[in-house]
Image (spheres, rainbow, N blue to C red):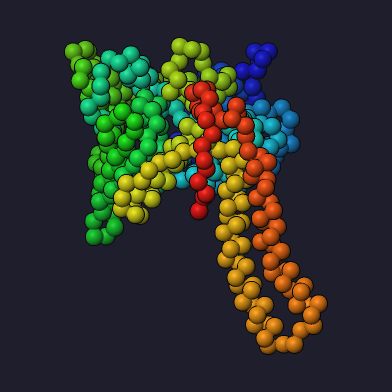
Length: 413
């Protein structure tokens, strides 16, 4: 909401059907005024049913000409939508980004914008706001389960085999739920079992974190898509289960709590939109429930670690560093340095071959030597900028706001 209590005027960009509950929550809860949609494809009919007077545009460029838009929901990771998201973010609009299955490229492209202007981007991760998940987070915060002994997240997908893109999407949302209730993870081991034709029959990922037991995420093919999160502690057991009909929460010695699935999803989407439009809620909200762009980046890092673990067949240490302009500058300089280290010897060899094959005047030899080594010399001079942009000790803080002493930084390769 705006400071004057007015509903923000919103645009919709993309055709992801999974983001439709967000549109319903936005309109039905009167949280924003959806006035225009672009590149929505087959979703146009559903959006028009929600907002009969909705204006439909063919491409995102038309959204840039509207000065009345303050919020844009990004519901796709197509190339056109990616470029549109970048341009709209630079124009000052706040972006609510739906997390799909293969949108990691979109997230990395937008990360620099978030580093430049924190708070402009907000990931839509409604599953952490489901009522059963929120109650589970509260139980863990109050130590009602005591020390955790085991954690398992089991999910089924319809069909006789698992789809890789759907696996990535499900893992990204499920690991966000696990992070919201358990905290950060530092290690990951992934395994996938396939048949002779390459079809994936089972996917298992084991996560590890400080003072946590091994956390097992597992997906199997089966009937209708359902998921179950089970936590066992030395003081009790809690199980959260979901299917297309209902969401349940079962505690030891207590009656099963039930929510109709449609109502639970709608409430979670509404909570997500409220957080996105008004910022973090008050002090009564658990810290793990406040969503930031870093939450999405941590999920993407875990997804990338899964792929790395599958490729290398071993446990991967997950090291997350919050993005900043300085870190991005260091990454770019490292990439440039590696390229110059490869290019300079090649140019030296070419120069020697040319000088041996043709008689060159002295001034031309000097000029060629300067051209060969000038890029690398300029790069070495630019390394001084790393120290010029080095933050002071007072500026180096950890995420909980406590000061952290500067650490020696290892070179990136």
